[in-house]
Image: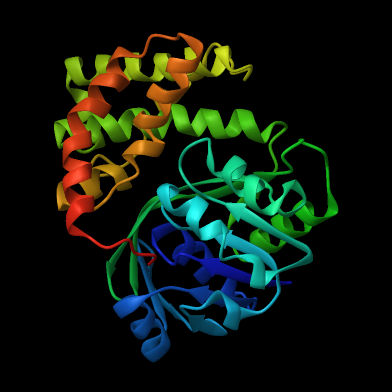
Length: 314
């Protein structure tokens, strides 16, 4: 099985490196200094367990050079998914499929609109990692997993085969009973803690230790729970309590990509996080005052960063 990683950031780069280290044919699509460093020296991953350096079988900025592959791991920012989807056709054969790992609940649908449902599966991941320099990804903590499944939740040989390949590469991978519920469960966590962290400029530890911030976090989670129920997603009643418990176990110094991008003045995934909550709530009539506050507060910063930066795929 050969794999293309489109977007070699903290997510795509980390999981692509694990597969490459295990001997899988991994072809990476990146740009700029990051691409040049990967070509010249390989991709370095720094984790609490040390460093590893991997050499992908190919590193390029042109999907047409990659050729047809079995799986495309899509690791670009959520706001790039629709435009990137238009460039994937040179890598897609009759049996190829795309695994989107964006935070949010809209990426798979955007890909289906362009590629058709036969070439898209549902997916999400858990990891705290980022590009710390050209050709270098740093990861924090021991949380790293992928959950994947067919969009109709049917069992399939292709999903099980890729899950098995990930496991053989040292990546915890599982097929949930309902991939859409799994996506919303993660969305409930990341959009809430990411938005509050960006507004507060605070890491996980400070958010959960401050009573007002923790209460705001709980309210933000409950807004997404109510939105999911209104959308026909059957989340368990205990999901907010369990997610707060999960947040309590994360490294105190941890932050989300949204917070890091906002603080650094880079374009962020705000529109796919709290922005999506606000948009979907407007369609269903669900009240989302916390996410509306987050979105309205951070949107000017996000727009300012976009006016000063070219769109990039790492």
